Length: 475
Image 1 (cartoon, rainbow, N blue to C red):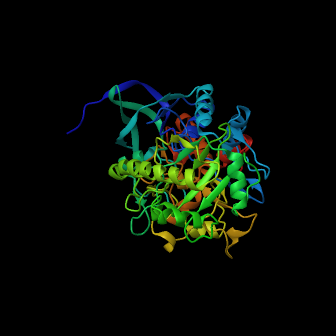
Image 2 (cartoon, one colour; image 1 turned 90 degrees about the horizontal axis):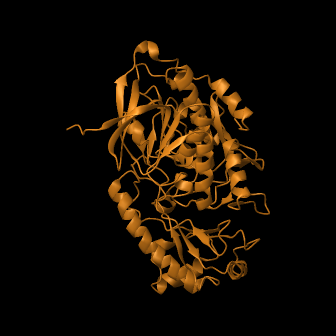
Image 3 (cartoon, rainbow, N blue to C red; image 1 turned 180 degrees about the horizontal axis):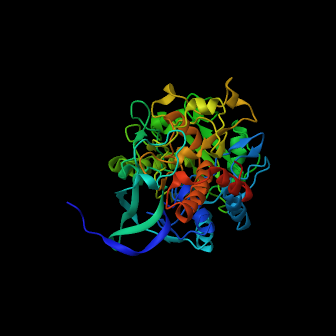
């Protein structure tokens, strides 16, 4: 049965599905390039993982001590710093930010550029039509032998019911490749056995005496330089000095064994007395963020674990005796689900060998970082080795072709769902890379809509690289 929907009379040049980490930046870039842009977002704010999943701070992505992600990422950080919602520590790390502040900054950047946003709206399905063979541009390596399909509209659902929103080019920034999968784009998900990276439900503790906590951590082997920039952690078997406290808490029934699989806390700029936790890790059998039952159960499992971790912090960490739950992220932190098959698939070998590409849109030196539900059986945060990638001035590139999905002519898929293997995705999925891929996608989509009838493969990538550099990018 085909559900009835209403066709919105307006048409946009670029429609961004998902206003998260890549999508918000894509919308800003496309609007600044002169496109009529609509960003469709399921939550009530932009930023996705960085705001609604409370993933703070940004993970560093540097080569020879210099940030690799520039352009709109630099502007985002500058605006956060200007309003007191961003900070730079004594080591020059400028990636500390307040997720609530980022919501305001991203929204202002989009609206100032002339873009529109439609909140509280879920993606349902793309509407497709065949594209005549003469309408397709040259694809280069990995170009399709058959004629790709064309997306004419995106069916969405909100309080107005089902509506079809028309555009010339679409950007799938859902993180789970929802639009691409609905359009029939082939994809991979999980490792060779279909097992995904672990999910987390992040939270904060407020009412923390950070000065006392800082002194306690220093006295217990977790060296801190400032009470304003705390970072502490514990993972079973990784020689954390906090492991004896976790063992004591498990024996006392305060924690469950799995609560020590991953524990990490950070300070938050603009929120004195509050610590953001990159945990709890959701139980191992709930690892597919594209499965609605897993995603729903992750919320309840995560909240139960948050209660346990709160009790642990109050009892075992000095300065946390009067702490209380400040925020529980409204979104589960999902690291990996579907990954499209694009015109190029980035591999672990590409990363370790520091491969360069003529159509590069992003540089990365963040390590392979697999939060495995299988414990130590998989690669975990590889930072040392003999491959070229482990040199301090190394980096690899991400090609434009990795965000161009097979089988569709007018769609781009930047962010964690880009075309990559399971191992490679774990290195490129962090927020700043998603920013840069999103910026490239937004510019390319605006140009494709304006000059090429929506055909994203017809965009001059050399000109795209030049424009990104002109705007402060590093490609």
